[in-house]
Image 1 (cartoon, one colour):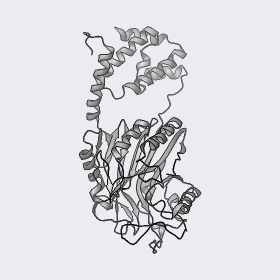
Image 2 (image 1 turned 120 degrees about the horizontal axis):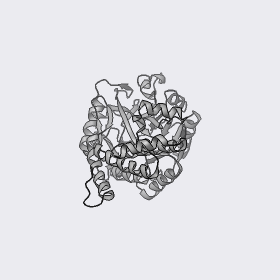
Image 3 (image 1 turned 120 degrees about the vertical axis):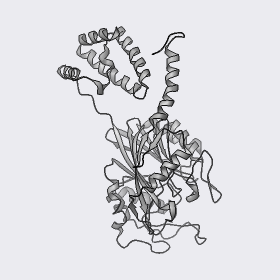
Image 4 (image 1 turned 90 degrees about the vertical axis):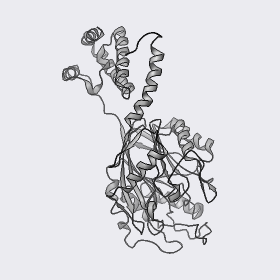
Amino acid sequence: MLAPECEKISEQNSLEEGKKAVFWGKLLNEISRELTPSSRIFLRTLFCLFSFILGMGSSAFQEVGELSEESTVRLIADGLPAVPQPKRLRLKAVGDIIPGTNYPDNRLHRRKEELFAAVEPLLDDAEIVFGNFESTLTNTTVSTKQMGSGLVFAFRTPPDYSHLLKEVGFDVLNVSNNHSFDFGDRGFQDTVANIERAGMIAIGEKDKIVYTYHKSTKIAWIGLSSFPNQNSILNMPHALALVEEAEANADMVILSIHAGAEGIEAMRVSDRVEYFYGENRGNLVQFSRRAIDAGADLILGHGPHVPRGLELYRHKLIAYSLGNFLGYKTLATQAQLSYSLVLEVELNERGDFLSGQIHPVRLQKDGIPRPSDRGETIELMRYLTQTDFPHTPLAITSEGQILKNETILAESQERIDTSLIEFFVPTGVAAP
């Protein structure tokens, strides 16, 4: 009975009312995009009833993608503007990068352009490319590290390597990690300056939020770690205050977190504090979820030197560790320490996860990355995601696609639907 009346009102709408119809249609489409079919029908019926009362007509409740050819022609004839495409961001991210060191001895490649040659194509077709730079770009001669035990390392990469990083495609580099101050404040300042001089963005300076723009989207970047002289996740009030400030001043907030235990024994992640040689490296699960509650949209983790599982929390993606990406004659490469990846992520304008892709990479014995057609990283991350986060609504295919798990989402949505129906429908009235 309602449908014919709504259609009749739609035909009588003026141009302004038609514009309102499209607006409300887009709103309904956004609200109902993840509802179950029965709930979607129920919600659309409610909106149509309100439409009938307000005189806006059912055209307000046609999803944009479901407009009939006749309706589309009528809209064009009426001179309505085309519906704008939703804003999306495609980002690619990698883990730890050490292109070689000349301290305490020379371990630099004779032809540095060969370091990224095999994987450079994997960094293409993204609007932003991110990496964790775990060395320094300085000529400072004195290190602050007490070396000699075999457990402490200092890395120093020639400043002109910054141009190589830019040439292969990097846009944003994190400098908040346990090697940022290998050569003191001067070495750190040199590193930041050389990254910026090459045309890239350096994130991770203490108390600093870096803002960039992608088209009309303002993105806030914060580099964090578990170390006291940086933006430390161990000082949760301070770290979350930075996230809240970023959320208030940007459309999207992306966090880079260098934390967690290290090595093959550190592939698993759970809601607990992690330690490495007695040092508190933070509770990544707790902090990541709290950060998202405070306004973060994407979390890119690194530091454990191995890939870890993924989690989708409140529609936001958490990558707990991206592993090693390049460690020429510096990083260990045995077993899973050599498993690497380029993580591709697509986000909507609110920073919600839409889809992703794991591009598998394998480090050679010398630490140089090459694409892998065996998919070891994919299988490892599938296993870790399913084991550590069995209820997270993500599915990773054998080809490395990262998709929303509609079954888990539907179960979660069903609980939300029940609550909505109980709120809107009086007791004793049967819902559709």
